[in-house]
Length: 112
Image 1 (cartoon, rainbow, N blue to C red):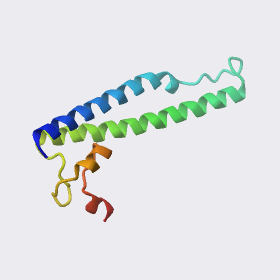
Image 2 (spheres, one colour):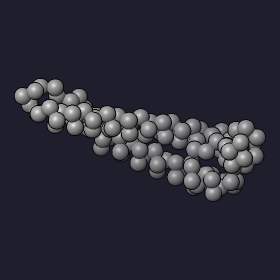
Image 3 (tube, rainbow, N blue to C red):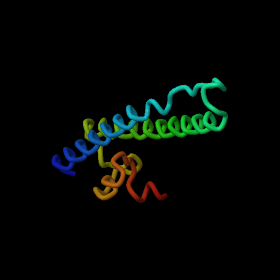
């Protein structure tokens, strides 16, 4: 993989990290504490609010995992290890990296 490819992947990763941060900020109100006051909202509305809160927290957990994987990919770019399989040290095909920017294994090692 050449320097141009690495620079393109770094740009893509940083853009995806920014997108994740934007989504996290936009979803923060959905994760707020649900008011349990019976008089404020009805039981069904409260259940809906609790369910929405749980889904928002689960989505945030998934975004956090993806952000950590992408940050690790940026670290590998800076360390000169990006694009190489962590198991066999072969190059990971660019097509695979385009599908999963944080891929750490080649197709053979990932499927075997």
